[in-house]
Image (cartoon, rainbow, N blue to C red; front, side, top):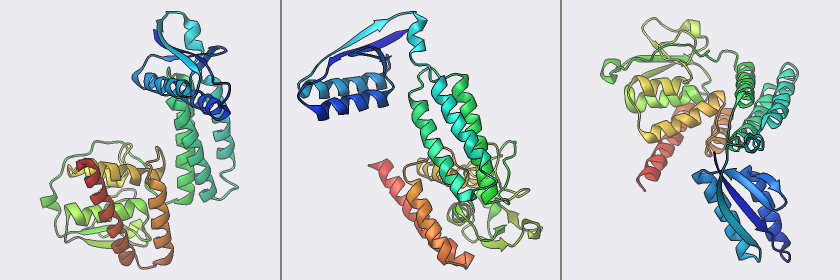
Length: 310
C-alpha cells in the first residue's frame, strides 16, 4: 500500500497560518504518525490536498517535506479506521429515529439532512470503507424514508422492476393524473411531461389516487403507470422511460430526488426547495402552481445547459 507523508514545521510567528493548517489537515482526514508527521493514502486527491497545505505553510514561514512511502504494515490501515466515528453518527441517527413519533416530521427531516451532510463528510475521509459505513448508511436511509413518509403518508413506495424504454409519440394528447397539492416530484414530473413527452397533456389533479380515471396515465402514486421504481423517483423514472438522458436533465433529476426523498444534497437544492415552498404556500390553485413552478424549471434547465456548454 502506498502512502504520502507530510513532515512539517508550522510557522511560529503566524497564528492564523498555523490554525489554517491544523484545520485543513483535520478536514483532509490525515492521520497523525507523530508530532509534525501526517499521512494519507497515495491518491491524486490526497496529494493535491497535502500539496496545497504544504504550499501554504511554506509561504507563511514554515517548512514542509512531502514524501512517498509504501508498506504492508496493517498499522497504517488502522490509522484510518472510522468505525468509532460512524458508531457515534449511528447513535445520533437512532436518537433522531426515536423522536419521529413525538417531533414534527419537518423538524426530523431537517435533522436528517444535517446527519446526511455529516455522513457525507465522514465518508469522504473514510479511505478504506467497511461495514461501519455500510451500516450507518442503511440506518440513515431508513430515517430519511420514515421522516418523509411521516410528512407525506401518501407518497408512493419504491417498487422493484425494470423500466421499459417508451416512445413519446405513443403518449401524445393524453390525460395525465396525479395527486392534488403537488410538491417537488409531481411538479417536476408534470413539467417534464408537457415539456418533453406530451406538449398537449391535460393534467388532472386527484383528491385521492383511487379517483384516477381508467383512461388516464397516472404518475407519482402507488399503482400509477409512472412511479418510484428501484431507487428512482417518478421524475427519474420518466427520464429513463423516454430516454431523456441529457446531463442537464439528469442534474435536475438529482435535485428532484433529494427534495422528494432525501439522499445526497446538490448545492442548488436548498434554494430551489425554499423558493418552491414559498410559492406553494401562497398559491392554492394547482394549475397556477404548476405554471409558476414550470418557469422555475425552465430557468434551471437553461442554466444547467449553459454551464455544460461553457
